[in-house]
Image 1: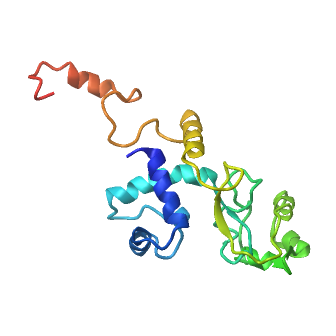
Image 2 (image 1 turned 135 degrees about the vertical axis):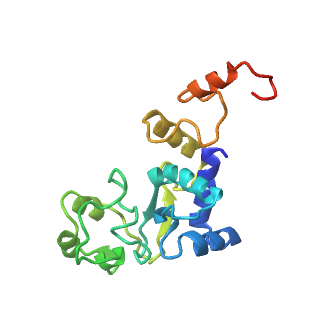
Image 3 (image 1 turned 90 degrees about the vertical axis):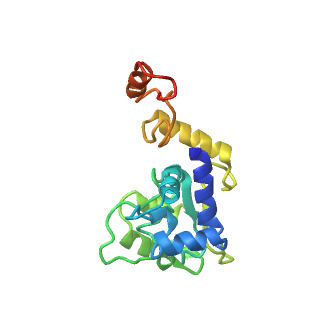
Length: 198
């Protein structure tokens, strides 16, 4: 299946958590975590492995938009927009778990942020705007201005990742025209055998 379509299905799993597909996958593969943090595991289906392949693109552009901070694990989830991978640097130790623990009266608790967060991330966190209406946190696609997931922007992100070597040029099970590993295919096609065997 096309990598971009797999990423789109992954986006639906993350943001539309009511459909049956989400409930089945959550119960089977990522019961105690989120789709973004799910591991491959053992005895997995081809479909789950494929979704995790598409998730690689999502990890490059998905982050949380902070609302009330109650849904965001500050050490595991991507939420810092200025950081390269949207994560806080440093270790958790015995520090707070949720972003909401850094917010007081719809504003950042500057003293608490400076106590918990390290280095340049203090400035990055304090730069994040907060809503005074107490809206819920939501996942957004960082490569669009409005935060909505668009396949065309995800496609550009995937192409950049392919050029940088972060993704395979083609997915598992691609045909014989794949440039990187076609040496074996050339040998097969040059065999002296009836066409049906090739």
